[in-house]
Length: 167
Image 1 (tube, helix red, strand yellow):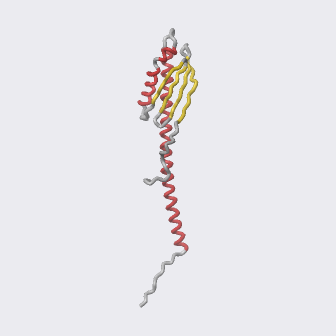
Image 2 (image 1 turned 60 degrees about the horizontal axis):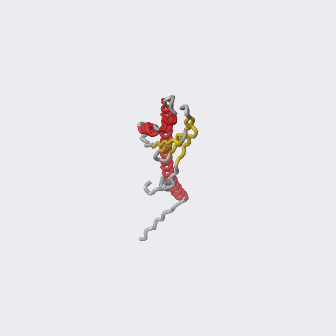
Image 3 (image 1 turned 90 degrees about the vertical axis):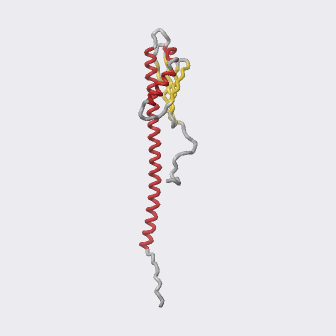
C-alpha cells in the first residue's frame, strides 16, 4: 500500500506573514539599541550639565570671596597687595563650596595674580573648565574682563557604541 505523500504548501499569505515577522523582529532590535544609545547620551548630557553648574558655582564663589577680601582690605594699603596673599585661601574656599554640594563632583580651582590681574581656573573631572580674569584697581574696585567656559574634548575613542556585544 502506497501512502500518499503529504506536501507542505507555502502560500502567499504564509510567505507574507514570515517576511513581516522577520521585519518586525529587526525593527525591534534596532529600536532597542537606539533607545539604549539615546539613554547613554542623555546621561552624559546630564553629567556635563551638572558639572557646568558646579563649576559656575565655584567660579562665582571665588569672585564673591574676592569681592569680600577687597572690601575688607585696609583703606591705606594697596588692595591688590592685600588680595595677592589670599588667593590660595579664596581658591580653597571655592573648592569647598563644590565639595559641600549634593552633587559630589570634585572640582579644582587655581588662582594667580600678575600685576593687577587675577586669573582663576576652575576644572571638573569630565573636562569642563571656566577661565576667569579679573582686573583689580588700587582702590579696591574690580572688573571682570573674561568669563570663558570651555570643554576639553576626549579623543581617546572610548565611549558608547550603538552596537555592542553585551547589549
